[in-house]
Length: 130
Image (cartoon, rainbow, N blue to C red; front, top):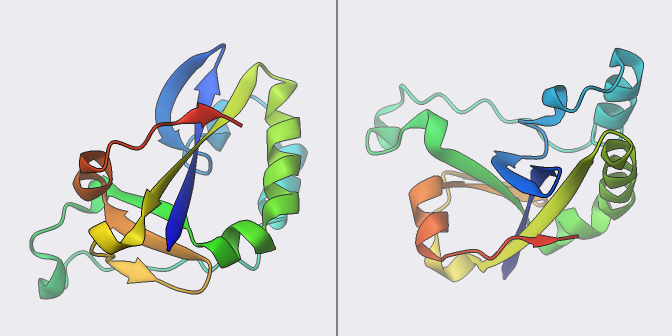
């Protein structure tokens, strides 16, 4: 299965952060920021307790979230709206894909997987302008 990640770029420079992690840096007004987040309300927001011994080998700051095909389909309109909104402030969305058979997810649901950043980077995802 193909997993898809969206990251932010400012003025043509990749920022190395996911679209939700960096959204507060875009500079949009709070009401617009809240409206964008509301579009993703049905996306589960898991609490991952990194103190659990199952995660002894994982640093919580090094997880990256990737959409499953169902997540891309379900949230395609919201992703387009986010892309449009950030473009008003000089930001762009970048997109990369990896194959899930090469990662060991820490968390997964129908719409997303959280994988260790190191595993994802080892697959050398090629982020391209959306």
